[in-house]
Image (tube, rainbow, N blue to C red; front, side, top):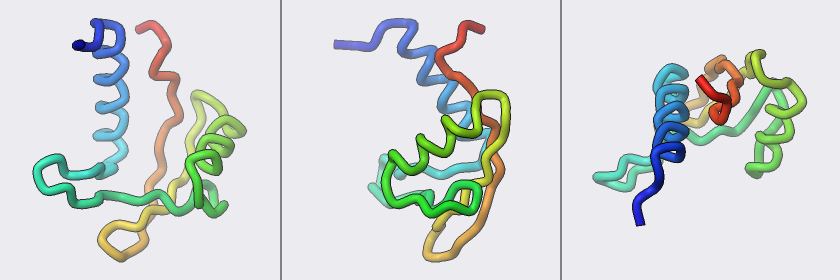
Length: 88
């Protein structure tokens, strides 16, 4: 079953946000792992809940500084927190 138009639009908004932030996901062709988020605002991220808790605490419309493991090296990127479910 194909996702409906609303789900497709939300996925497109999320994909644009990821692209804008410069984050790299899993390469679908090779299965190679992209960026692994290991920190958010200088707090360690070990589980998805660690990341979502920090994002919820900061809030929509603000920014969060993510620490990434990219190919064995750490880097950081600042991303805007947005509500991808909000009507545009």
